[in-house]
Structure formats: structure tokens, C-alpha cells
Amino acid sequence: TEICSSALTDVIHAVINGTDGCLFCFGHAGL
Image 1: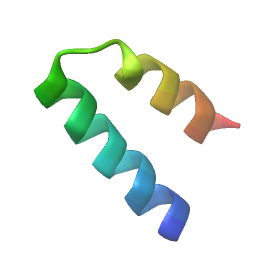
Image 2 (image 1 turned 90 degrees about the vertical axis):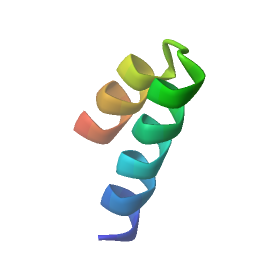
Image 3 (image 1 turned 120 degrees about the vertical axis):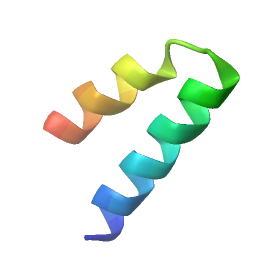
């Protein structure tokens, strides 16, 4: 569950920062 929370947090930060980290986060979470 910690990994899921971290992934969601990273996605939120990525969206706020406007970076492409969001895609990387989703891909990493998928693994």
C-alpha cells in the first residue's frame, strides 16, 4: 500500500510540476 501511496503522490507532484514524470510513475507502478 505504501508503494501505491507513493505512486499517487508522485503523480500529483508530477501534474503540479507539469512534468512527464506522471507517465513514468504509472509505468513503474504497473511493474
